[in-house]
Image (cartoon, rainbow, N blue to C red; front, side, top):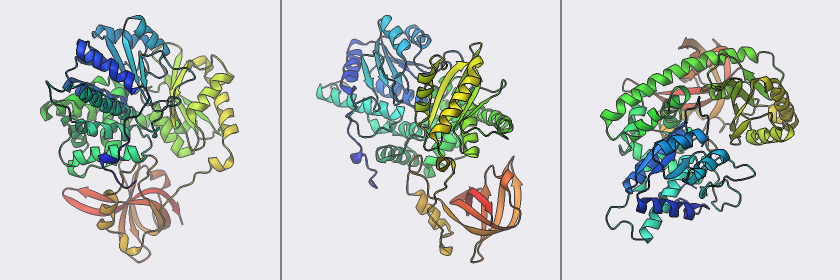
Length: 525
């Protein structure tokens, strides 16, 4: 699994690919307009941009629509179908959504559309009546990796489509598209969606990162990274996950993901840069919102004894509740669902994050079965899910959710365990060690960046930014070290011995490089 060459990539064996290819080839030959129905997160945006840009290279008449998060909600709804029809659709292709969209698929077919679903979310007991479904998590699908992101599923569909066109001599009047040109999008969407970086996903991400570092990525991704102050030739998976991804997601959280997709589809730096700057502005606004909501959430849970935590505040923004749920989950080590009022009167939208040991989508399915009608809609993954319910039902749901979590999670599961790679030797606190780690990976979900632990002595501490702490440390052998603890103000130790879990990193500033420790956890020793 150390081989990250494209030749090690799994072949396109997903069920549904033959049927999807037939539909797309017919659309190409008949000049039928294809409309991509996207989603409003980074995975959906990269999937949409990959589909639109590659299908255009194949000569397709293609456009895209994205749901209004606040009015239409998630997935292929009848409202989004109407938007696709208004865009002239004859063939509708979903990306990163659709596997639970029974009403939307029925509306599309009732309007005469051919429907192809590409998704990676877990299906319900019945599949929608699409003409083709491509999803590695459908029952009986032979594809060995079940961890493809939505953009990965679309990449595999395009691989299969190109192969089928080759067989049918479909490139006599045009050159074949180089699908590796889309790997920057695949890498960004895969990392941003936090799917498991199994061997196949690591290949996709590593190949996308190679293109970025070599200056062969698209202007929109370059502009997003530059807006975040990142250097392209040193791009890592962390830069995609913590710099480009959040800026892209900010559009879907606060306004309209079409802004993000336009940035990804930009043909030149001049076209991409103003769009990336607007996404950067939205991301700053998102951070301010998230910070306020997180403080309020911490007040709500100050004395909670719940195992499954439900949070709600009338003033919260529905586009940011998922981030709040994630932060509180990290703080409490409990499954958390945060709710905000939806656009529809009397309705709430919730976003949940969980800990190891509790599959949150399965938890919602079990509650839905026990309490029919309590949840209006739900869907998601093992670690993250979303749902809608009536505000009047929140207390009943919160009680049911807590009871399920309490039954499912024992005391061992509720104890937070931090795994490290042990202690570094005194001669390993240097830039060579960090550079070696940077060349490994790519690191991410299911393939965590190496972290270490050890005891140090705090010689100085100062607060920086809103709630960060910068430390001056002394190692056991007397070596002086610098450390940064993001969001660590509440646990600050101003002097004396401490035990740290940390990652060695390079602090690059004004053309200089300095070795430092990035603190993940800290205790007074």
